[in-house]
Image (cartoon, rainbow, N blue to C red; front, side):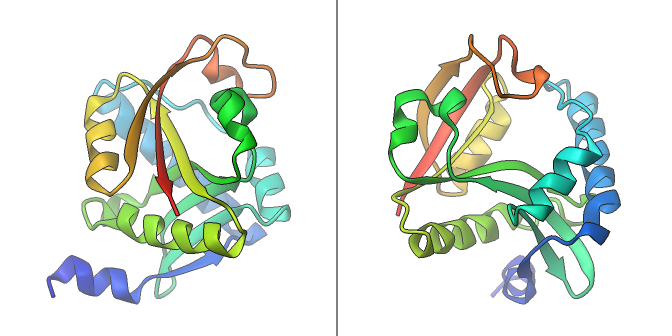
Length: 178
């Protein structure tokens, strides 16, 4: 077993708590800096209220290595604006995955994939789904290498109900059938 596999075995996934909000926002800032440095499309500055709402609703998760937050992500159970008619199929949707820079390259997404499949089964869902910027080929290939099936692009026109950064976006869509 290599070092990354040993690390993944030690990680715990827990629902986030209100005390995690500020660190979550720092992880988002770090992700935006990484996107900017590499010439990718940028996330917007997410509001503190958005994260607080997700935490209150039990839809925001963190991955811990001992007491260090390694990664955060959000979960939805419906995503009709992005997934359109496919949203009628029962799915868990992963959003806003941000990895602590100290843990990049350690296979964290594989840990999320395993957890999400189990979570989908517990919630009686048929799919785990996610989207990312449609023009980020590196990220698209990364998610494919992590075991997600690339199912194509989605061009968003009607973005009612989504944050403003989705206007006119092209997204890459991924899913795993559980």
